[in-house]
Amino acid sequence: MDKPELRSLTLERLTAELEAMGEKSFRAKQIFGWLHQKYIRDIDEMTNISKPLREQLKIKFTLNNIKIVEKFSSMEDNTVKYLFDIGNDIVIESVLMRYSYGNAVCISSQAGCRMGCSFCASTIDGLERNLTAGEMAQQIYEIQRDRGQRVSNVVIMGSGEPLDNFENVLDFLEIIHDKNGNNLSHRHITLSTCGIADRIYDLAERQLQITLAISLHAPNDDIRRRTMPIAKKYDYDTVLKAAKHYADTTKRRVTFEYALIKGVNDSAENAEQLASRLRGIMCHVNLIPVNDVSEAGYTRSSEKSIKAFADILKGRGIETTVRRRLGSDINAACGQLRKRYKENRGV
Ligand code: SAH
Image: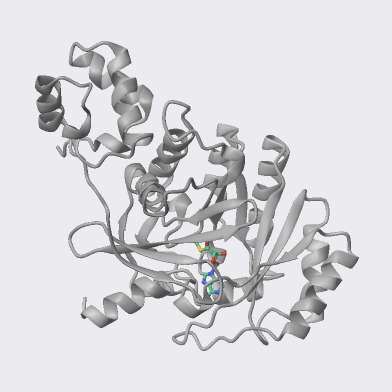
């Protein structure tokens, strides 16, 4: 069996492992602090841990590190895109966005994705592998280290479907919010899913204070099935019911993401239908001008139709925002950069 990866262990699990090795539980806290507060990359950097114990740790565990391979800074805004090497020629991407309230990072939860949404670049080559909890956390740590600034908000909206990597994502959420580690409030974390309804119920049961975002991108089953294969497994009503359950259980407002694609889902009629479907759900709609993905042949809706769409929703009492398009000059949309990198290297 593979050795456990040290950075992916929750404090509870690390404590159990250390106790099984005959160590006191405070050692687990020290080690956890080195990994998740000081962001070390090598077990030998744990200077208050004795050399024999460090050697034992190296025998029992691995400590995988992701490495920055490229960095692209947007000339239009302060967005920075990071490409990380996670080993075996696999790369993933994360994006740092600077807002007035602080630094937000968009992290990947999988290398690639198997959901197959037709407008999304992350899924074109399928799923390469799930990311571990440690690899999700380290995207944040390496960016913090690179900028010398703290990341205050995290969105799990990079490549991958987080609810298709459920256990690792839950461990990540526990690790990142642990006060003995990075201590990031769950209220500052958003998890975005294409709508795996069964897992939304499982997540609701955990009663975490994270924000759930659901990629809806359509006002009905017919249109949704055209762009999102998951809609064939979980129909519109099923997804909305799960969303309502999540909001009712956690008392957290759910976000619906809606990427506007010209001539596909952006008519006034589409907006009216969306408004009636969302009635009674504590929610917020985030309209996203679709980023062009040449493979799919979709183009962004005009500014005028985006505004008209937003106005209809608002007029029907639905809180609506239009996402600012950050970093479009550096291919900051989901999976675009990684894809370009792979193509250039012929991987
Ligand atoms: N798998 C998750 C999270 C990753 S995608 C999900 O589906 O929500 C993050 C968001 O970007 C999703 O809403 C996704 O639908 C959207 N997205 C993907 N490709 C896009 C594109 N070309 N333009 C705009 N949004 C896109």
